[in-house]
Length: 336
Image (tube, rainbow, N blue to C red):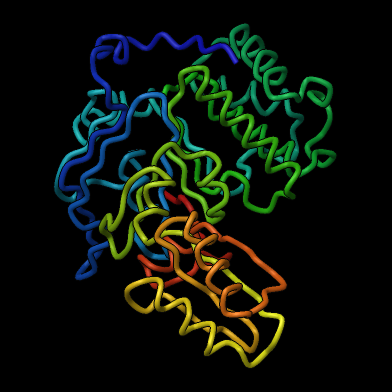
């Protein structure tokens, strides 16, 4: 996807590496502190994921960056432009796509894009041109003049994302971009997002699907109770909570305690868990330790019928750090 943006505010800051720079960001509602002194740097050209339980403050933070809420304390810059001091310029640098399509059901795809382009100040000729370009880029050319009632959920999400790119903003906020989509359509949206970044766009992503963050995000921040409690690449976050686990099913139920004793002699500390009869879970410092465990069990004539080495997941990270699981109930919407 070709990127044609020419915003001077971005060009004059080409030597900078940060797309977003946040220092001590605070937002309060009465006695409640929704965002509590957050510091964050998002690099140009990356997909940065934000995870957190419901009410953690992630959407409040995005609303401040998008100029939808005033900043109570601290500072935020987008491509070197101060969010609080120059909100009108900020709005030229960003696109926002919420959880649900914001397009007009009574219009066709082409009419929706042309209308939004006109509302953003483009001439009729420019509006028609950008609508054609975006419809083709997002694979909607064949359906351009069909009513939205004939669009699938995935087509509507792609049209909504296309609408946020009318002015080719260099930074896109994506809030739950694949909510409600089937797995096939979700994969198509992931590819669309990757293409945006390949074209030079920076993406700030919030998602309820931890697999989505694992697949897309270059780096992730976990926000809980208004503060960043963990930050790093997906692999760094998973490594931070421990190594792999070896899950075994023994051929003879009742040998769990003997197996526990054999394995405990190999490693220091309590690394063996017996989740149910005939099953053993072993926390590994290194995946290669699995072979050592199996050899020790064989030497003691303890037979194993099933073996699985499980790497930590972002679900494990989320649960360990926040004490909660990421579920459908953890959604937050971007709202003015």
